[in-house]
Amino acid sequence: MTKWVLKCTVCGEERIFEAGFNLSLFGGKLYLYCRKCKANREHLILGCADETEGCPVAGVDVID
Ligand SMILES: [Zn+2]
Image (tube, rainbow, N blue to C red; front, side, top):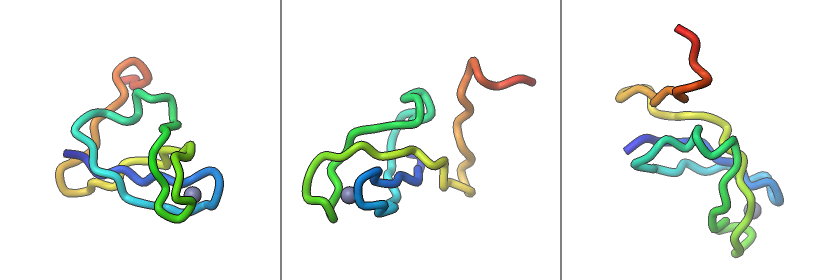
């Protein structure tokens, strides 16, 4: 599991989301339930928050 920092594009609420897959493959956006909006909202993927296990890299975008 990798921790990701997501931000609701509607209310600006930031949250940590744990995923077993690489969210960077979603192009920076993901629809998830926002507890503040109480609805499914578009979230920006701000980045990976996992400093202990390390973050997966985004395949084709990575040079070297
Ligand atoms: Zn929200």
